[in-house]
Amino acid sequence: MVPTQVEAANVPNNYHNEQLKLKVKSALAIDSKTGQLLYGKNINQPLPIASMTKLVTVYLTLAAIKQGKISWQTLVKPTPAIVKVANNKDFSNVPLHLNHAYTIKQLYQATLIESANGAAMLLGQAVSGTQTAFIKKMREQLRKWGIEDAQIYTACGLPNKSIGTAAYPGITGNAENELSAKDMAIVGQHILAAFPQVIKTTRLAQLDFSDNNVKTPMSNFNWMLKGLPQYDSHLQVDGLKTGTTDAAGACFIATAKHQGTRIITVVMGARHRDGNDPSRFIETKKLLKYVYANYHPIIFNQNGVITGLTSLRVNNGQARQINIGMKDKSSVWAPTGGQKLQVKLANSQIDAPVTAGQTVTKYMFKSGGSKLISLNQPNGLQLPAKALQSTGKVNFLIRFWRWLFGG
Image (cartoon, rainbow, N blue to C red; front, side, top):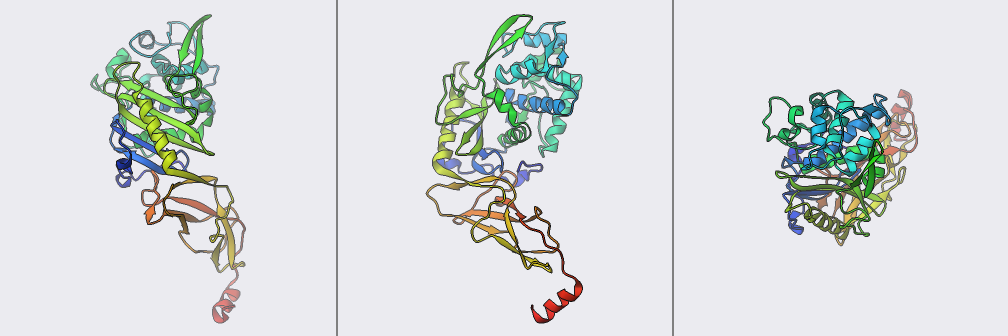
C-alpha cells in the first residue's frame, strides 16, 4: 500500500521517540508495504539527503528500462562536466573518461554500490538528455508520490556547486537536495514496490567496475552488509543507500527482512567525524533492535479471513451476506507486551451488486486504546477487505416483499 498522496500536516513529527534516544537529527522506521509507522523523530523536517538522492535516479533509470526507452546494454558517453566530477578524488566515484562508452548496467551498479557521483549523473543524461531535464523529471516523479516540497538540484546528491558546469541554473552553489525522513521512506517504498530486484544489487558488498580491461574495485558504503565491518547477522540488512555531505552529516536509508516482512529505516544527520565513523550504522542498529524488541509482525495472507469478521451484510442482494477476506498479503506490527490487537470493520454492510474481488470495506486496527498509524493513514491504519464471492441485486418485487414481510 504505497502512498500516492500524503496528508503531511497530519503525520506526527514524532512517534514513540521518547522511548529511544537516537543521536541523529531525524529518524523513522516503517513497514515497507503498509507504511505503518513504528518510530519517528522529526520525520517531517526537510534535511539534506546527500547520496540517498541516488535512489530517485535509480528509480527513473529502471522505469526507463521498463518502458523500453533504454536497455541494460545501452551505451552512453560522459560529457566533460561528468568526467570532471567522476575523476574528483574528493567524491565517491569510479573513473569515467571522455569518448569511453559505458553500459547502463555498469553505471547502475556503480551508482548503488560505490555511490559513484559521475555514474549517477550519466544515468540522468541517458534518461533525459541533460542534467537539467533530468532534475525536472526527478521533481515531477516526487510530486507524483505526493512529495510537494522537495528541493532537488543534482542527480547524484552533491551540492550544486560541486558539479561544475552541470550545475542547476539560477540556483546558489550551496544548494543541496533536501527531503524529510518521511519523504525518503516513501522513495524507499516506491522503489521496493516497483523494482524489488534492486535488492540484488544493493546487497552486494563488493564488485569490480571494468573500463577497457581496467578494473576498479568497488566497495559498498553500506557497512551493515555481510563481509563489511558493521554486519550483524541478526538484522539481515540488504539495502538501500547511504549519503554524506558536510551539510547532511551521515545519512542512511536501510531495509531489512524480519519474520516474513520487510522494514525500512531512515537516519539523517548522524555524526560524521571522518570516513571511518560508523555512527549512522550504530544508530540504525539501535533503531532496528528497538523495533524488533517492541513489536511483532502479524502476517495476513491474501484472501485470509479474520475470526469474527468473516462476512458483510448485503443490502438488496440475492445473497443476504457475502464472505470477505484480506485483499492483499499484508503485515501489521503489534506492540509487544501491550494489549491484544483489535480489529473492526469500517462498515458492516454494502449495497448490491457485489463482484468477487471487489474492495467492500476496510479492516481497522488498534492496540488497546491506541490506534496504529501509517504514513498515509495518520488517523488509523486500515487495510482493504475484498468480497470472496459475488451476488447480484434482487428485483423491485423481491425488495418490496422483503420490506413488507422481512423475509
